[in-house]
Length: 90
Image (cartoon, rainbow, N blue to C red; front, side, top):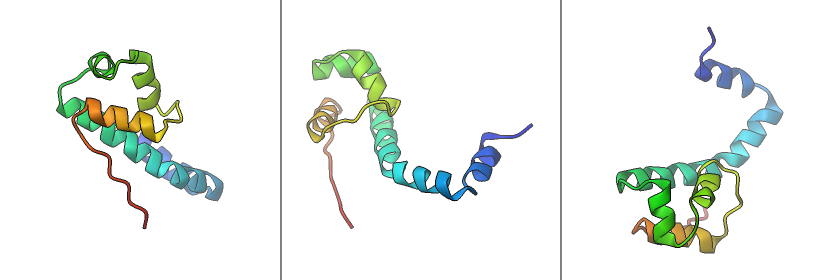
């Protein structure tokens, strides 16, 4: 049986797949950090959404990578998590 790790390694041998994957890296890292922070705070998506004054499906879409969040939206999430956003360009 093939594991996800082996399957991923095989897929990433394709230069086009590798390029697309690398381009999404920063987006997925941001989502991962936000989810980790939400879980550290012990919040459900619904609880975070309530703190932000939005509906839970918006949080779900963001966490699934199915939205294109604005900086304003990311700031609202950070505020709901009692966190700050720091953007670095290098």
